[in-house]
Amino acid sequence: MSGGVSQLLEQIHMFSRRCLFRVISMGPLPIHLAFIMDGNRRYAKKLGLEDGSGHKAGFSALMTMLQYCYELGIKYVTIYAFSIDNFRRKPEEVQSLMDLMLVKIKSLLDKESIVHEYGIRVYFIGNLGLLSDQVRAAAEEVMKATAENCRVVLLVCVAYNSTDEIVQAVKRSCMNNKADRDGERRIQLVDIEENMQMSVAPEPDILIRSSGETRLSNFLLWQTGSSQLFSPGALWPEIGLRHLVWAILNFQRSHSYLEKRKKQF
Amino acid sequence: MMSLRVPAPSSFNLQRFNEKRWRLGRDCFLSFSPSCVENRTGLIAVRAAKSEMTAFTAAEEETLPEGLQPELMPKHVAVIMDGNGRWAKNQGLQPWDGHRAGVEALREIVELCGKWGIQVLTVFAFSTDNWIRPKIEIDFLLSLFERTLKSELETLAKNNVRISIIGDSSKLPKSLLKVINEVEEVTKNNTRLQLIVAVGYSGKYDVLQACRGIAQRVKDGEIDVEEIDEELIEQELETNVTVFPYPDLLIRTSGELRVSNFLLWQLAYTELFFAQELWPDFGRNGFVEALMSFQQRQRRFGGRKS
Image (cartoon, rainbow over all chains, first blue to last red; front, top):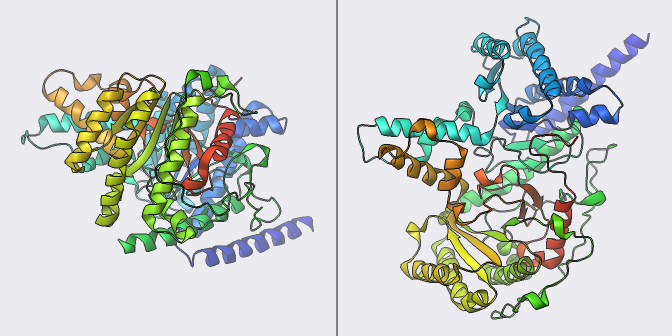
């Protein structure tokens, strides 16, 4: 009986969410959302759980967010899963994060996984050479397995730093410039941009960082120059539909003014 | 000085400050609490155009306002001075009156930085994106900048302020370039406060010019491609005019929630503060609020506070 009631409630929830999304879709929608998933450990501490469970709860929150993005028709989603700076944390925490990542990355290869259900193409962006062979191999396998998907693009930044990404792009630009026959040609912005790992996606429209911190933490510095920044106080596992809707409504308000102003010039 | 983008008329106060921090009501996501910052604009008339910056000497060093701790003061503050145009419109004035009021507001902040021990203040005066503005507005802004530099030179020199200008100078008029060189030369040994003015600047442009410099050095055989690292890029960025190139705090006024390509590399770990007030209204109160918010933040730089 209670199973039937909860199923009914779930149906009602899904129906009202679909209606809400239909209303929101009448305005401009972001094409690319980026998330800094901050606050997992604080969440575990707050609920008195053991350390690792914060990240597990964070993963579930991520899956829910991806589902909402898919339902809304948002094409690109980028997440900051693990920064190069995070390697400086205690070895036990780093190892447990790597273990969790390995499990979750491998699970993406399952037939029933969300990537196949929603047609998600997955990219792993970052200095993958810093990861263990197992994690890197699993990541490469997922990228290969999802290469044909085209409904949604998920970019997972792991072992990533924006400054590291820029250094690699500058290195490649300099190498190309050196090898260039036409010695007089100066490096242009587009040369650096096409050498960025994130060039597979357009710039994010909105960057959402959970847990209330208002800083970029070396994430997508190059790509978020024009992005709307949003920092809800909720910890990442607490992030929900209302935060997403709020961010999009804010985006829509500023979007219409920016468009008007662009036409003015 | 310039409004860089059209700010949305947002009544959502997403300013982050203390326990009065506005956050989404849990019950109903469509409810939003009123701005926790009192509207203190009133109707401020345009201040007299030629007010001089009062001299601040060591003897007159002001104690910090209550609530601010000297050991937690940021070394480098960056400011996006947004909202002059909208301020002027609200007052029924012309855009250039807004920019003039913006200069007054900047004077106040420079003075406070000098008094409160902030060592570097970077301000976003004119972006590479702003060149699409109407010529009449651009000409006014650049000539306002030139006049302000000339008139303030003596005061700044007296107050031990060093001025540095960063940005793409190739499109600036010759007369302005001449004044810039003179001001930089005269103040280059000053040590109390370094005021960096970004004109014709953007974060991407800075990385690009750094990349070009490095590419030339690679072509000349001075360095190897493999030697290119973060430190090398940092040295080539235009913010190498200071020993503290990374702002601890970035303030943007007028409620707009974006960085607008002002500084890029340098903002990796900068605390961002978005103020609702328009720039001419920002003043001392707004600045104190931003500093208090900054002092309460936990900066972890990717690590953990155990």
